[in-house]
Image 1 (cartoon, rainbow, N blue to C red):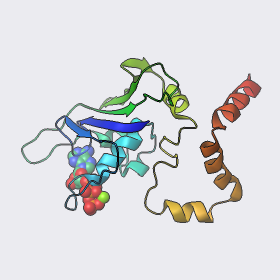
Image 2: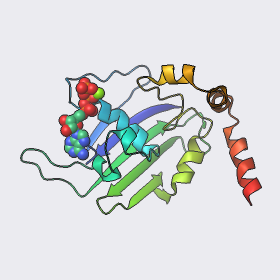
Image 3: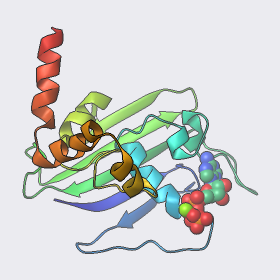
Image 4: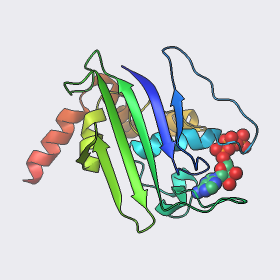
Length: 180
Ligand code: ATP
Ligand code: MG
C-alpha cells in the first residue's frame, strides 16, 4: 500500500484545486519559507481525522479554510482527498484504490467520505487502525516526535508497538464490547 495522490481545494494556502502525485519511492517537498510545505502535511493529518485545531497551527477548525489573500476572496469550504494504492488489500476494503475525503464548511459542518460514500470519523479511524497510517500513527513523524517517544511513559510507548503489531483493532473492539 502506498500514498498515491493528495488533492486539496480551499485548504489553507491552497485556494485552487491542487493535486500532488506521489510515485512509489521517496518524494521530497521543497520550497521557500511560507510556500505551504507544512500545509501539505497538515492536509494529510486533517483528512485522516485530526480534530485539534492547535496541532494544525490554527485556533479553530475553520482556520483550515482559505481565508483570502491580496486580490483573492476567502472561500466557503475546503476539501482534502487522499488516495492510497490498495492493490495488496492492506486496507480492509475490496478496492484496489481507496480515497478518503474530508470537507468542512464555514458553518462548522464537517463531512467524511470513503470512496465517495459518506461515513463517520470513526469509520476512518477503523479503516486505518493497525496500518501505521493515521493522524498519530508512526507513519507520520513530526518535528520533536522522536524526543517525545523516547521520553514518554512506557505504557504510551507500548501503544506504538501495539499499532505496529496490528492488535489495536482487537483492543478497540474489546473496549467497545465491554461498554455495551
Ligand atoms: P517554512 O519553510 O517556514 O516551514 P512552509 O513552506 O512550511 O514554511 P507553511 O507553514 O505550510 O509554509 O505555509 C504558511 C503559509 O500558509 C502562510 O503564508 C499562511 O498565511 C498561509 N496560510 C495558512 N493558513 C491559511 C488560510 N486559512 N488561508 C490562507 N492562507 C493560509
Ligand atoms: Mg514548515
